[in-house]
Image (cartoon, rainbow, N blue to C red; front, side, top):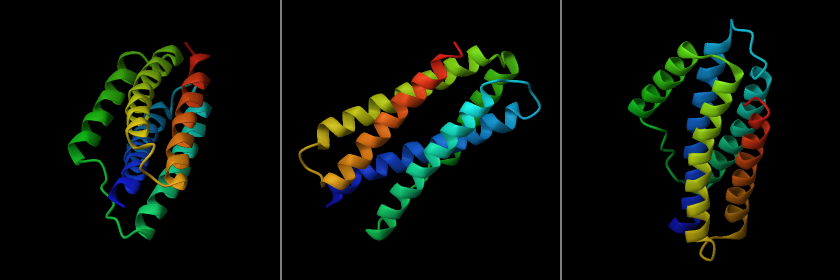
Length: 145
């Protein structure tokens, strides 16, 4: 049963951290005239859906929610702020987002491969849908490069 929830935990962890990062980025771009803002807000909505869905599954299975640590969140926020302060062009922001999302999708792909035969289909589908979503988000940000 623990393996079944490992993929769901990974979706929750990645989507929770992504929501926090996107919210931070939106805040940093608030008074700036960037075309990428709408795409970032759309990505946030998608990540929020996956966070909510994975959270519900974990709660239904009496699994504790493990949010990203304060240090990880602080480092991500500082990195985003530093990047936006040094170059807030749409191209630079898209590059930063694509790199970050790509790292997460690689981790998710590894998890899916290692658990594919050992988890229930509902949890595997959630993980695969999340991976597909990440790939679509990456493609959507490429137009800003």
